[in-house]
Image (tube, rainbow over all chains, first blue to last red; front, side):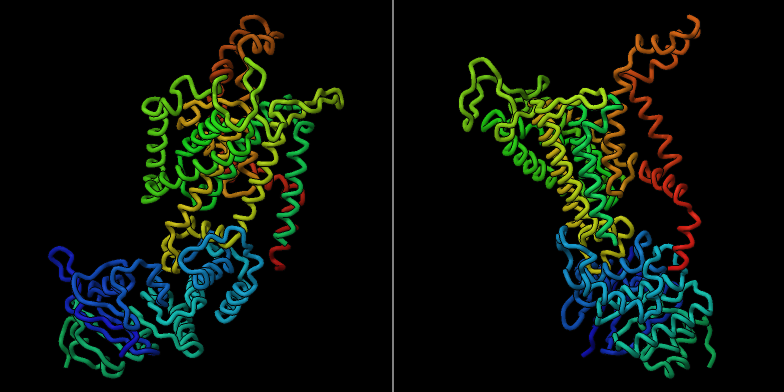
Length: 252
Length: 384
């Protein structure tokens, strides 16, 4: 049984069948990529996983518990972290504070009025945050305001914010979208590094094939709202249906 | 380092507040009535800053909590005792409960919709206080003390006199010391010192909230609420808690206003009062610790000075000019003073917002940087 199980998910927007009977089984410890051309329903699918959208039918279970109808913060508290297409960080706060906030959320839960505690005296939280920053190679930038970081560093910071919560599952929505080749390669290295050191299960939505084939252990191909192929990267590479979906022609 | 700096700030603040009757003597503002208003509106602004400065939620309705606090206090004076302690406790409690209701409703939306909701709810309370709730508020006349009020805890005073507000016997309006220092006649009264202690306490609470994990969450709400939700934090309870805390500060301020002068009218709930506290916080520096107090003092001081100037004072100023020029200047300046002092406030506000978006605190920091040398500081940052 996988850590994340998606069964018969359907989602319709007016006349458009955005998701058509999608099934997905994510193995624990795997890096599961979901690829597909623009408009295939990748984002809709991801939004169903994180509570932003509710599927019309079907079920989404994480470790055997349904996540449907749960608010984003509840899903995070179950152990699912999300990395956004454009890094979502606390731009007006400094780097260390950015990482300490998820750390507090992980320890204290969704709401706690600790209005008379002192952030400065939370040594444990601070150490955890600094360790993760060190691991991401950003410890020397901990006092900078997050908005002043380069795009690559913002991405690193966002990853650090996810990792500090020790998630069981990470959802990455096109983590290299709009990046230069060099930044893309850096991100790939970063994700590989995370995989080696922490072994967190990952679901990656991506359409850069270079990224997908460097990282994924399993690939599912989404086209027009349905999964048309699933398997190991080698198998997917030569799959005729995939070539058709991507290239719009049959080349056998 | 921050810990030390905060402690220093609190100590300097305390000394300054306690010495205010002396410090303000040269400015002509050192009489108890005005000093009390500085302190009380300082409390109001400090509380408002916890909501607006930290979370960025702009409420136009906080006057309602100020007004409710005043009514609650006067009722305590009428029914229970002229001691201000139970009155203040009830003010804070009632304002807290009321802000819980208003906050619960208006925090369903954010941004401009939130602001409009708070404005609407506050205006509704204002109209209610004037009309339906007259038995509670005494309508247009305002809620006042009467000779035949029960005051069940107080011993009967002398016939025919209204008792005065006190704190275990210390009468608020009593001037306990009036020395002459450097030729200034100073007045030290209990009312100011009660307000001052409350102000210092409020300032301390505000520092603690700013430096707490709770305060960090509030600042996170301001910068990126989406990220915070996907970080596992339920944001609504945090904003509601901030709203209620600021409402309780407003209630305390309202209770103190009534303690200094035991009557409460609906005009205290009008939206202009709620707008004024926004001006105070923006003018002083939103999201800073000391800014709201500076803004409150600034506005109340200039309100006091400009609203006292009338045409005859102006005639005096320009008397050295020939008659026609004299009249010309008086005509130009008079709309900006007296009852029209709001025009001056508006102009000052525009100048600050355009040239000093960070408020008075920002201005002070810029001057400080000029004096200490910006280059040195920049070098320091690089070497970090």
